[in-house]
Amino acid sequence: MTTLGLASASASAADKDRKKDRGQDRGTLTIPNDPVGSVVDGVRIDGSKEKGAKRKDRDRIEVQASTRPQTAFQMPFRCGEDWYGSTRSSHSPSVLSVDWNRTDDFDMPVVSSADGKVTTATRSSSGYGNWVVVDHGNGESTLYAHLNSIAVGVGAEVDSGDMVGRLGTTGNSTGPHLHYEQRRNGSVIHPWFDGKEFAFGTTLVSKNCAQAELPTAPYAGDVPLAANVLGGRADDATVWRRATGRFETRRPDGGMFRRQMGGGTDRPVMGDWGGTGKALPGVWNGNDRTFRLKTPQGPQEFRFGYKGNVPLAGDWDGDGRDEVGVWRANVTRFDLRGHDGGIYRKITFGKAGQLPFVGDWNGDGRTDVGLYDRETRTFTLRYPVGTTKTFVLGARGALPVAGDWDGDGYSEVGAWDPATGSFAKQADFR
Image (cartoon, rainbow, N blue to C red; front, side, top):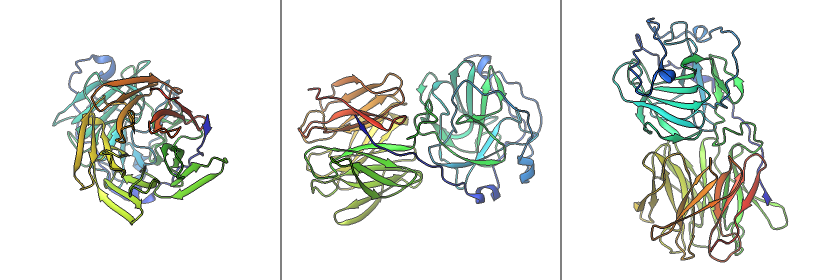
């Protein structure tokens, strides 16, 4: 077992977000009847007008101390993003509802606050507009309203951090924002995030880092990778530290080989971009959909994919050079980029809520795809002919990674535990 990874730190919030005009609900919200039942969505509307107060002191609402929910809720946004949350005395259906904003927030991904099942996914031109409800069990649920688009359907199982839609201004809304509610037995409750009661009128940094069931994991925020960084026969276990933007690869002697690139809301990739036999780092920024790679010929920058995707890297055509790709959870498809900048191949596979990884499962020199279910700890490998193979590995809440651990030309799977910073590697499974 290999231990690798360090604790991540929260970024400081930008004060300028508090000075911008924030989207508000408009008029009286009208909630349509929920076909699932009133337990989740049976909140009565109080009929009050929502007057879009702009003064900061009105954003701060004094409320009594609340009971901590059973669900380990995280913020409804991607790991590392900072968001300003406000309310007001006329907020409908409850003063405990949160309006979330940040700079240039329109169409940014909105993600599930915890694991659960989608019970409502409604598109409307009034009231909540486009809205989603996720049931988390124990009578607790979350609601996401005024979405520009919806990425899930009723009955879908979602994990914490899975995208449910994109922030918008549909329905009774006067500007882009996310209207968000935490509920218990149908009633709106005071929101909690990462084990702490939320203070209205403040900015928070999201710790929704794909392991909400481990909110205090010391290595949460680090991302596991595997690539031939050091030039040996086998791939090397690596982590990318979101807090510092540093790629850290463990040497055979236990020391660290470090390279700096990216940070914050970027997502890391590593690949042999020039066919030299060694992997170099890269990052993908989901806000501008831009890959930035360190190549043997110098820095390379280009756009590929869509907001909310997960970036990947592999040798899709077997020519010895890696290229990038993305996993599009909303359509359950891998889009793999070709060297000419277009899409080399599209692979529809799996279901939303699973986590993507890649590797060469049959040793033919071409990178294949796979998906990991964190709840069941199941790896599913897709072979070129369309057949699949499954394995169970790692602790609940672990993140998937795959690499050629023994240098035989075949990739094996691995699970990285954010609670311990350790890799559990699958032995040769051929």
